[in-house]
Image 1 (cartoon, helix red, strand yellow):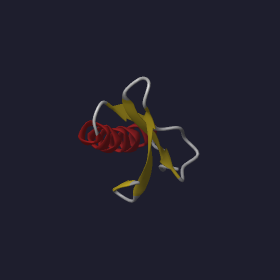
Image 2 (cartoon, rainbow, N blue to C red; image 1 turned 90 degrees about the horizontal axis):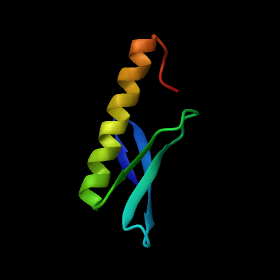
Image 3 (tube, rainbow, N blue to C red; image 1 turned 135 degrees about the vertical axis):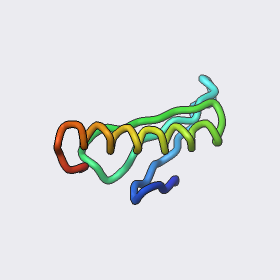
Length: 64
């Protein structure tokens, strides 16, 4: 599990594709991320959370 700004991300591994991917948990919106390494997946998770929060702000909506 990853944590950032109060959000939690769950990591999954696709051995055949050689990817680490995941999704932000505990929200109704679908926010996903992926990377080739744990470091990349962690950064992608943080970037996805930041993008999600920015998108919500642009829409004038509270993050879910």
